[in-house]
Image (cartoon, rainbow, N blue to C red; front, side, top):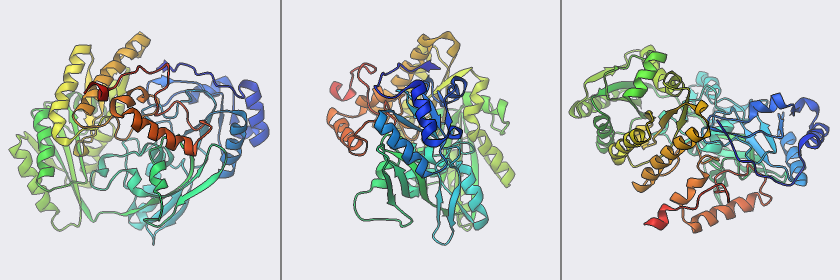
Amino acid sequence: MTAAPPIVRAGLRGAALASGLRDLLGSEKVLWAREDLLLYEYDGAVDIATPDAVVLPNETADVAKLARFCAEHAVPLVPRGAGTGLSGGAIPVEGGVVISFARMSRILELDVANLRAVVQPGLVNLHLSTAAAPHGLYFVPDPSSQKACTLGGNVAENSGGPHTLAYGVTTNHVTGLELVLSDGSIVRLGGKALEYDGYDLVGTFVGSEGTLGIITEITVKLTPLPEDKRTLMAAFPTMDDASNTVSAIIGAGIVPSAMEMMDQLSTQAVEASVGAGYPLDAGGILLVEVDGVRDGLDDLLERIEVICRAAHAQELRVATTALERDKLWAGRKGAFAAMGRLASDYYVQDGVIPRTKLPQVLRHVIDVGERYGLRIANVFHAGDGNLHPLIMFDGSKGPAEVERVKEAGREILEMCIQVGGSITGEHGVGMEKTCYMPLQYSPVDMAVMHRVKDAFDPLGLANPGKIFPTPGRCKEFSLNAAR
């Protein structure tokens, strides 16, 4: 972990801030002791920064009161769910107040007839699907951290997951939001209907990473559970073979509900940790799942098997029971955690590329690892080209080692952009990739984004230091200018 460079902002700080918050909300909703604040200075990324205080609201009214207070005293507000984010989105880079939604974690309504749920932002992703399952429904977006991550964080980052290839990411499953702006105004956008007239402001806020306002209630679509599903594991001699198979499956007009890939280094770590049954000698592992009406699934799976064999698959295994299916997916879902067996720290990237560029970019990732002397494991959503290279390192070697790892990550993201991709698919820009934004966007593009930010947050207090490059922290470079 590396401490973020402090940015001095005029406003209420320290003991005066803590005292004011306790008077406003009550001491039971405010944390200010040093040992408590340390628990909120990090998320799943590599940077840290300590808040001046932490507030745990019980309801939207608490958040609105807090926002008005902070607006009056020029104090930044940083929303936080479970802290599983991977881009520093919940890091209070400019200090201020972290708003933890741990106490706002209820399902407010399960509207089965209308296939909707209304939830608070602190609800754990998996808990919603568990509650909806007796009604034959589930919430589709399923990040690998779904046992811990919250719906508020999913909305803020526009999270994806293995099963969003066919069904779409979080923004495709959110129809309404209640939020608090940085001046304390409470706003409702959308609702239970699928479409509304006017600007798509719900879509504007999904993926805005808390920089436009603070989400306090979410209305989501629920989806009927598929009648049946089939899960196939295919092992290939090389990652090139596995990558080419992904394009071949999509090119054949087949869109699986999920298509995930892991390289040999990832597989070895997963097997040591989970024992999912992946062959250790495979250069690449591909997990493919199809679901829907039972009739026709076996024929669809057979077509996929033919494509895999033509692409040199050395082993094909179809899950014949729910237990076997769960075991295969447990390996993929537990892959990030398994990296602790390879190194004390890892830095995960989140680039997106066209599927046809997978072999080229993966070869570049290998080259980066060799040049920097770093081991890089690859675990990713192959179907939509969302890469997650995990760069292994030892954080105890100090800030210079972390910077070296970040440079390796930057080279990977530059390649993603060069082949027509993006610097993030689901983890967000956060504070981690702010300096990389000029690699992808022109000054005019960035100015338009700033105008949106200023319209909703003119005071600049909503999660500052995120998404946009910060003067003095970011180098001035642009791939756009180099072309």
